[in-house]
Length: 305
Image (cartoon, rainbow, N blue to C red; front, side, top):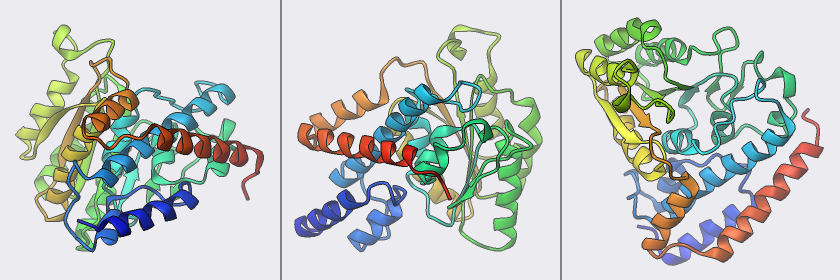
């Protein structure tokens, strides 16, 4: 646990450059002089998780006003799925996601001026920034690409982990059975993240069994399929941390099944969570919201190099 003075120093430093560094647990671990994962009750962890959510939301809302739905997948209200899983990554880790997955690019730290300039390029570009891989030729196939990258990490005997995010609702399992089977057989360091649709939750539609299939198939292939509330960023983060720890230590892949049946907004839910623990500050929220909005406006006016 860091001392009060060190926490204040770290907080002051972050205020000066919130947009320049991706939010990572590794940074908090370094600041604390501790290699273990911070506890979910840690004040700084909760603040950084909220910052990750808020940043995604504000940039998504700006993009919604500026871009068409065909250019980016702006999953407003679903930010916890991406923010909660990516929060535990190291800079050398990799994310594979659709080139339209706006939240993945924002969360990993893609410069806003580059991202907000893309417009019609979003669905045709590949991004390689701080471990983000968004396949241009396979825009809906992050799992197969991620499995290949995880295999390379395995051969290189690195502790790097891949997080493969399928942001589409009601995903089909068929095209990924081979990838899941291969990853399980070779204990690849990869997390497969899927998102269930609120419109057709599996529990209410017997024909819509895709997410149960993911969970059961993962277990059949010898690795966990974990169901979590996709609107609760702390819950998603805790599951992701456990899965990342398994993957880094050679135990193989996991499926994180983020269910979106709940109607709560992840930002409001996180604020309530922080209030209950006495770590919420309305003035702090006002300050960071103002700062983020100013950064977004500045980035939008500044052309990317």
